Image 1 (cartoon, rainbow, N blue to C red):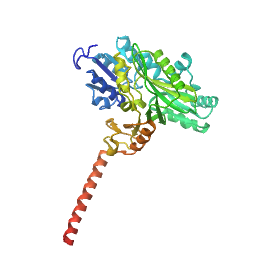
Image 2: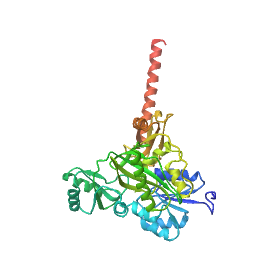
Image 3: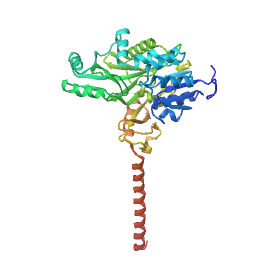
Length: 419
């Protein structure tokens, strides 16, 4: 395979549609191979913008704007990195001969919970929780009674847990319906799911090129309000259950087709494995692979897209903890104790230009036996805080003023006491 230089007429081009923290790591891995990276997002100075060769700010739900960037840049590969993209633009790009990763139909299915659930449960025959689709509060109330409480309610299209909630009784349904309507994405239709009292849940990262499928060691994770908080690898699993999980992931990835890495989410209850969701791109819980794998999920994604060999992987145990902002700021400052940068841990700071409460701003990564690494990650994440630049500057000025004042009074005392 030939690897030309970036910014030349024959360069290999990756167009990232979505330039958050996951896209940033993909961009870094692509540039290790001399690939030209064009990062696109809805706001300026997104994380991948900071490391890309070129960047654009557009409304990615606007078909014309997406197509305009594609036609201008003529990328070798188009990488949808988030769900909030105009799907018609991807189909049109594919019809024009562009290579969408893994393919436009896979993105179409996986960005919509209704489509992927019907695909997995009814077309592939995989075991899932019971589910109903509703469009209004009355239908939600009826579906919840049929499925039973507690039940999980989500918009059919949203990301990072936005709009997701658990209704534990009939009185919770009104609030769940309202939360779903406030979600970022399409809340015109909701999915109501049976609440599976699972033993644990995993992400099984599955990389696929033209000739092989490779399964990473399973990643255990803890979510809060539908969004990842902690993850660790490898997850200790019964061998037969692990093989069943691989069988399901392989079936899903093969049916979706294309190349790249897929984050297959599964629930485990006893010996039963339930399919939950799949992302046709690097997964947020997979950030742990930045410390646990010789080839991170981001490196595997790039290798799979280029149809390079995938099999050489070495592992160490480790864990990750996501840091989410407490404050809102247009000039955020992360305050991190040096202990977080120790011999068994490090921090990846995403460089987002502003913050709001709950926005993921950094991740702590720890190495070691998974359970111990997880406890260590939980300790270290407490050593991070955030503030506004002005607030941080004022606090620093107060500190310096206090030190100067203390120094002045110490000199006076020394003079009086003859020291």
